[in-house]
Image (cartoon, rainbow, N blue to C red; front, side, top):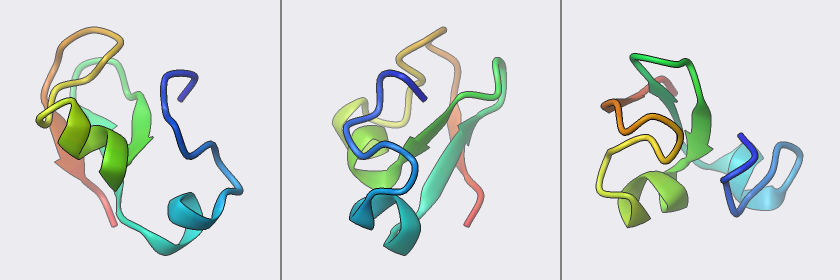
Length: 51
C-alpha cells in the first residue's frame, strides 16, 4: 500500500473501490489502479477489484 496516493484511512480509500494484486496481495485505491492501468506498482501483477 506504500505506493498508493490515498493511504488507508483517507477519504478516497474508505469511500472508493479497493483493488488487490493477484500476485503479491498489494492493495491500492481505484485512483491508483486506474493510473497504473490495472497493474500492480509493486510487482506488475494484475489488479482485481475487491469492493
